[in-house]
Image (tube, rainbow, N blue to C red):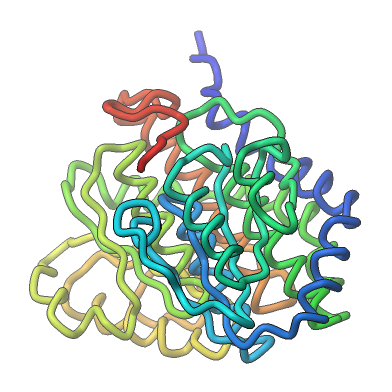
Length: 342
């Protein structure tokens, strides 16, 4: 008798539909983009934790690459613990939280607005405290997400932020790519990365690598290995891994490299091939690889949307790997769905 699907697996399959719902409700995105364009911020700060912070890392690269807008993550404790005031005139503050409840996230968003920033909440709860605190709220329309491991909410958070930046810039090419995502993400849920599971086997540690927007995806992947598989995974920029971490790589050491069809693809694939030549068991989402093993992947016709399909393919794989290990991905030990920190 076949085991029932996990809640996590069902929610991964719902990602294309959730993105479609988000795309069907663009009014709040347009209103926020118009207001931000009028304010003309000189820089952006982000505030988030966990998967939401990885979404912010992705949006940092997008804002810098498309708008030339420097962006930095600010630790919520700057406000919630230390009570510091920040110089945020002409700043944009993007706060990302699935629940919109965490007191430290809310406090930094509140003080950022007080100190002069235009604030935007990206949340799955448009009636949350965070939403009430910010100037603008983008509802990610993910619907209920019951598995502890965030999947739908991570993807819809980055798509909501991507929509905001595309509208702000009025980038028609990026808008078209975003609207193509639902069909492409459906394909991404069906890619076969089972050879990655086979390669990891009983290994207790691995690397995930990326660069630029794909490094944010690598960060999220490392977290999910820990959450759902109780496996020690460390994420590095492919530009950093040779600066020390490579010392622990030995024969058969697993490495998963995320490469989009962007200016960093050749560099990421080159590092993947280097590590494979050292004996590591390396997988990469690029057809350019010569020594590393090429993974099936869905290209989206835009370098900034490619990472979205890559994380969906990863989610499908990591849920299967958890099941193979006999671990319930819906209830990781020591974790709960909503984590509220001060």
